[in-house]
Length: 129
Image (cartoon, rainbow, N blue to C red; front, side):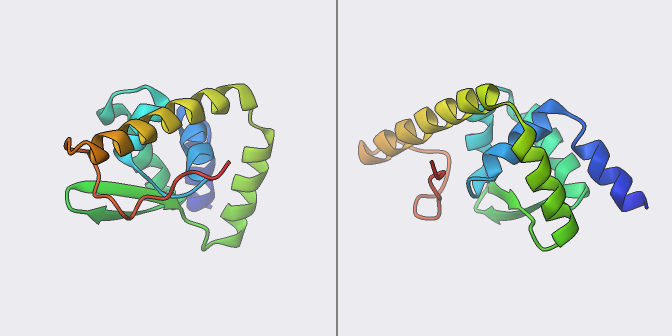
């Protein structure tokens, strides 16, 4: 019962729902989520910790960067997430996706011009349309 309460508490915040929606398109680095949500990194990391503690996300570290993806191992949690994502407003998620795309394009341009970028190239998944 405690796990179920943690899941619903984790999903009771708009920012965390926006994170889940963005991660529904694939794995993202914290820096990608910061850009997409237009928030500071500590605030985004706080929300990611809540989602991870509820076992809704998995993470992996690559160098100094953390990458997150939806943990779809538990069928029940998967169904809850699908239900939640279906009912979310598209207006907010469109703005988030637009900012994410702009950040990914900027990183690609920076990488091509030799400027330092936040994440290690090669393991990034571009969000699906």
